[in-house]
Amino acid sequence: MNVLEARGLGMRYGRRWALQDLTLDVPGGRIVALVGPNGAGKTTFLQLAMGFAEPSAGTVVSFGLSPRRNAAAFLPKVGYAAQEPPLFRRFSVRELLKMGAHLNRRWDAPLAASRLRRLGIGLDLSVASLSGGMRAQVALVLALAKMPDLLLLDEPMASLDPLARHEFMRLLMAASAEQGLTVVLSSHIIGDLRATCDYLVVLTRGRTQLVGDMDELVSTHQRLVGPVDSIDAVDHVHEIVQVERSDRQASLLVRMRGPLLDPRWESYPVDLDQIVLAYLSRNASISSFETDLAAEAAS
Amino acid sequence: MTPPRSRTGSGAITLRLDTTSGLTPYLQLVQQITHAMRLGQLTVGDRLPTVRDVAAQLAINPNTVLKAYRHLEVQGLLASRPGTGVFVAKELRGPSLQDQAALRRALLRWLSTAKEAGLDAEGVEALFADTIRQHAIDESVAS
Image 1 (cartoon, rainbow over the protein chains, first blue to last red):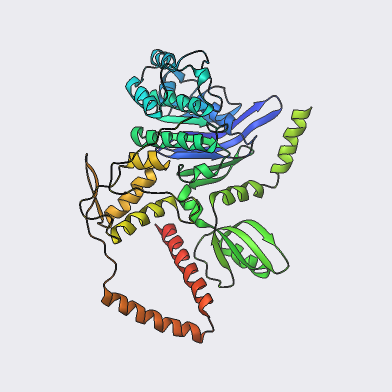
Image 2 (image 1 turned 120 degrees about the horizontal axis):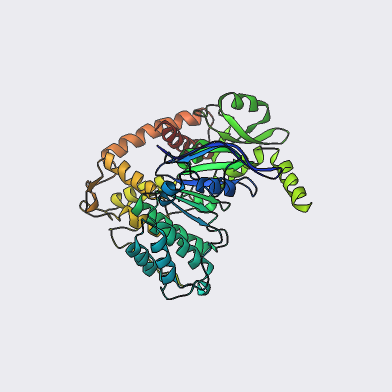
């Protein structure tokens, strides 16, 4: 069952469309990686899903509710954290917990306290004194204490070092096991996502390029190396995502639609980075889109 | 920042995640468990770490851990007892010496066919490795 559905979703800021015609289903119980270049519309999508703004086009529905028009019913079901968590710097961690308890109907205070204890984050510390990694962890603990059914995380680890990212992911994976929630996590650091996310959405220019089960996508994509003159034969059976060719030899990144039978082609496994990169660069108009953005930013 | 070290401590073995391995995280877990069973590091009645503890320790998706445990349960190697955990349910030994000898004879016959077809040792290894990998992929596509 889908917990979040976008249909033809679009958002325009002035003359620029930050997100255009996005149709996407988020299946329940998954940990979804939302991947794409800057300007792809990841943040805009998550903000529309939270009901922070009214979409310029299309609809977004979560648990059968409109995040904006049914906010009172929707907000208790959803948790949210962003790259720079807006925690009040002069508050202590204890005061943040107290505030959360006052503002939320569903609030598991003992769970939040025991998680912070396990993380070694003292309740009397002020937010200002926390490291970036700890602040991200506190923001996540607070979002989880709401006991949400859906957790939306917008680049929550963007400013963290690898160790802090790993600690953040450990907390998120443990919470996912304990609370059984659906997570949508946007990130541009692909390596962290392979083992943590089980569903992949690649977004460029507000459109999905690739959507599906993580393991299945990784195992059905392969690099094939073989003779240039038989690319068409490969193309006939499989889906070629990316082609690199020299005079005689071609290297293809392929989504396999069946077994590889032609012995002239050798296959090699590819990792998630290579797959995502191939889909991002497949959309040839990305570069012109980014040029547009740069021109707009400059003017 | 001093991240607290977590102890799994809840099971007989410690699972790992190798990011440079070409194998999916799911297959890595399945292989580590069956490997430990073959080597006698896991025997009947041993408890495996809980899904939650593996997820928290390795920063791995709990669904993946669950899927690996389920796969081994279906094979009868593990059994879950609600509320207490997942346990090793069966000894896992390699094929008997007799079976191994028969497999070896069949392989030798195949090798001489390959040699007649002009394949050298390196060619055989490449073909073998590629076929095993392809077979694993085809099975994962079919499942």
